[in-house]
Image (cartoon, rainbow, N blue to C red; front, side, top):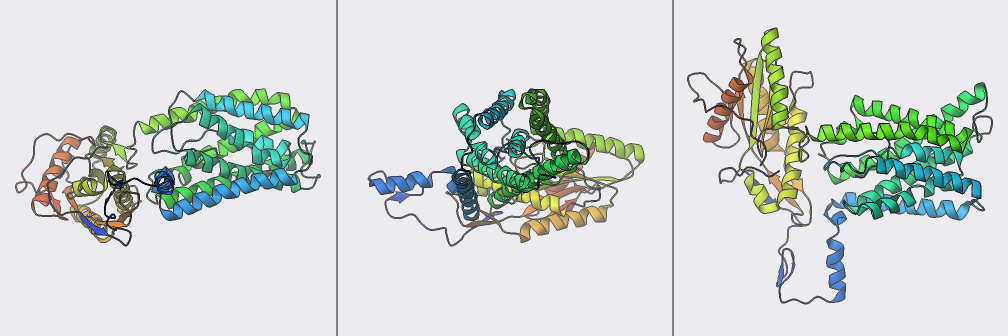
Length: 485
């Protein structure tokens, strides 16, 4: 996940059946007499304490896992305590010159926010607003108290400017920024003058000064992003964007680009605060680039599951099929569907159903080979997923389908929110496989064969795996990628 201030489909209803087993845990208790699952009965009149309790329970934060709630509240309070301690121990820190530089840096931060304000935040994703460029400059060129305080007015501006989204996420992300870059400022100012100082000198001092700034930027990044990653994982371990934000090469390159930009702007501000205007256009251009890249990704990725949309997956798979025909490489296609997934949605609602889908996708991707044999996973139906396998034979494809089936059946999936706390779902998955052959079939042919095998697996019961057998499996009509709906 690149450094920055982060502001952290309908399903096709299958046949009726018992493919999804719902088990209440310790928290699954019946409501009290006169009180429905949603609250008080129609004739009940609550006293003021009861109304306050219901109001607190209605907070979006309350819908998270208990561990995530404790973590978010603790980190937020730690951020507030750090800001208060910095102000209390700073002494006579408010000077006209420092205040003017601080306000100018905050002004640049606001301009950076406004540069991409017309682009709506991508649902289900992690956004990067590049504000750490200005926070690092404040951490290095001003006393630490300014770095601790910098996210506070920016948060107030964001809440006043855009009331959409969850307030607790913005408060939490700004608390992590205050902690990260406040600590970075303390580290920089604790360094000896021979290494640090208010400005870069000449010769060796310029190199050590710049290196220390880069190191402090890395400290701020690690603290900020580490705290954010902990919150995301505790809230939803199967969050589809967690690995993309932290582990992929593209994300690390983004980190280095933004860190180098932050160091460059910090050098300019240290030489003369008036020079910060020279760094602003580059920051704005980079911010717009990140926004465009994220919107482009959102057009490809299903926000609920983190896999490709059906039309996008079909284009990718069609390209793989064409390449396989050209290289005479065997290509198999696997279609897997959760059995009777409608039971989950009917009992728990859309939010819990999406949690279950994300965990199923996580199990699916964890089971796939990491050697480049498997193509990207696509969501081709409400609870139906597909992927290709390159260079495998029929036996290998069948074994992989059986491993997927067994892992889904063997791993209970728990969801936690206000409407479904403490329930565990035990699912089964039917798998249809179009086996590789030497004739080099098209994607349309593979889809028809995999759909035929899937229909045979579902007809045999739940949790079945079938491989298309020419002459024995009836082909359906022309295959069409089915969008979630």
